[in-house]
Image (cartoon, rainbow, N blue to C red; front, side):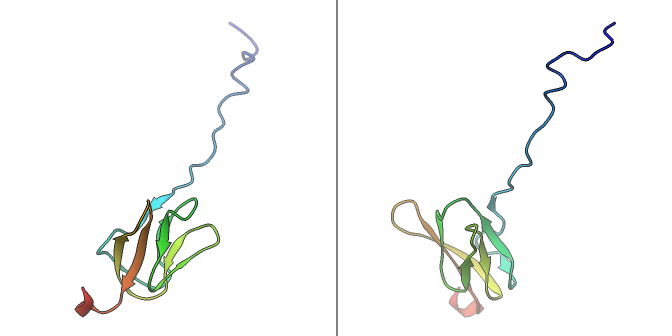
Length: 88
């Protein structure tokens, strides 16, 4: 039996924490003020009505309502929040 660890085993075993990116609220879901809708790197998803873009490109809600995704040109999608049910 060895009395010391192998040279490789003490240098392994570390890993970084995952970033938990992605869509947090999907289309049609109800959101309240301040809810995070998407966490992303870069601005693939663009903010629309009643939505704001944070400094780390997080998109969050500015009002209560339903999330609406709308395809735009290229590879971008606009995210908005519809506040009253009559517009759905």
